[in-house]
Image (cartoon, rainbow, N blue to C red):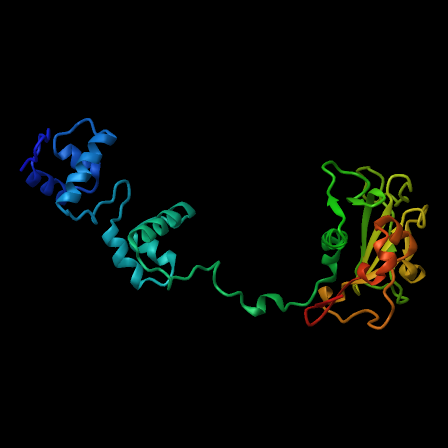
Length: 301
């Protein structure tokens, strides 16, 4: 059957047979003897197929599975991995996105499917005890959070430098060296190494003090959560220090992050005069705002 003004070389019956026995629109076009399968030709075929209400759910195109197969597999599967296996498709990111897209287009309900990534995290994953030896790797992140929470922009140097962080403050950019100490020494003191090794291949070389003109601040975090911010001029020429001698520079407590209680819960939390000056005058009014105290129970001061 042809419609008025129709220039087709094929009939509706031929189209029905071609659609029924082929897996794609291009294959249908070839079956109808149309060698030049342009976008315009495909649009004409689709328009007539829609007019005839022909079923194309078995079409796969470049896929190995049909829309109908997808409709059959999804309801009985419990995960996207099972869906892809049921379709005979490789389970990778591209195929998952493609299958999900087809499911959305077809209106297939997949709300019951679970992805391993989307599964609730077992509480047991985060109950392992804190590993003190990992403090040295997390200290820089703590420092970045501490300064950022105080409105200071923090940047990491692109090339290796004597400092770890660049912190923008009201007094300009401060070069910060981050140090940590995970455990007390044999006498019960927090002895923090604040020296550096010369840039030589021999790792056994003795440590030397930082040039006080190459850095501005030391950010020090201890294994009990105590946080210190100390000007380099105060520690100039030293390769080690006992934190107990610098309590005036203790500015916060992150003990709950390390699995413990607050270091001295009732102790006043006061920023040193130097810290107040270089971060900003607002701490002269509200010095408690400078403390970085994180306690259990999701309360932060």
